[in-house]
Length: 302
Image (tube, rainbow, N blue to C red; front, side, top):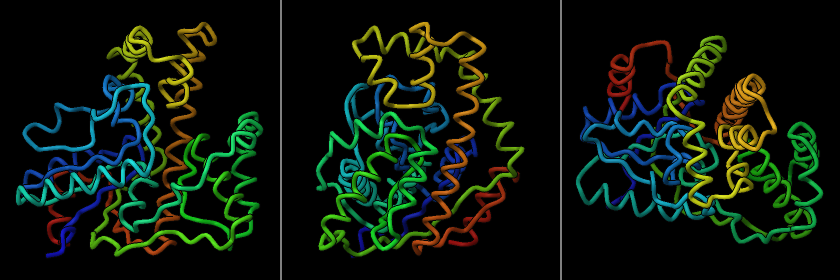
């Protein structure tokens, strides 16, 4: 029996309504949700990652709150955890729904690739850390296309890892990516007009700040998660930590963080388009429609 038949995938940029759609769909098809979010795996990082656990109601979910804040978590961990979650969902006779915005994690299981055995290059990393994202993107794209690989470049840390792997492959052209049978999955993406996406992101950031985002980060620091670790997680945790360290004032915190989240959403969409170029068929949904309408559209297509 094919363990993965019937997998439904819902992806989209931040603030596009992925979770609400996945939950709505799960309730209609006896589904269970596997989160594909690189930061929701960490306990205590709730507001900044938008876990919205109350939204799930009685729908089972996996790969949320499975690691302590401060731990490391990589795509290889996600691949293993995904397989375990998938087996559990199938054993419960439920329909698996993969939902998230971390493109590399999703592609890693949908097309099953791995460069995780390639070693770190600390000397290279130290040199790259001083460059901004724009410079790193240009460097990555300058590597000959026949040496490229499937990689998420949506954040600085992932860009650095992508460059690290690309240089290693350049020196070791015999290295082949590990491929097994691809998942039989139907992939749906939520698309929003640019202005609507901007409005949703800004409004959501205001809500998160009002709901206690700063207190959440203060609590993580009090628990022993270092400032360096929180900054490494990026976006909300990076900038709120800088604020708490006195590196930013209130106005600068909001302005810089809002700008970076918009940029992140743009990079997410760029990566999703790359997934399509890599052979994944994404059926794009109109994110301006009501969740119930989108659920009905998916039900008709599956």
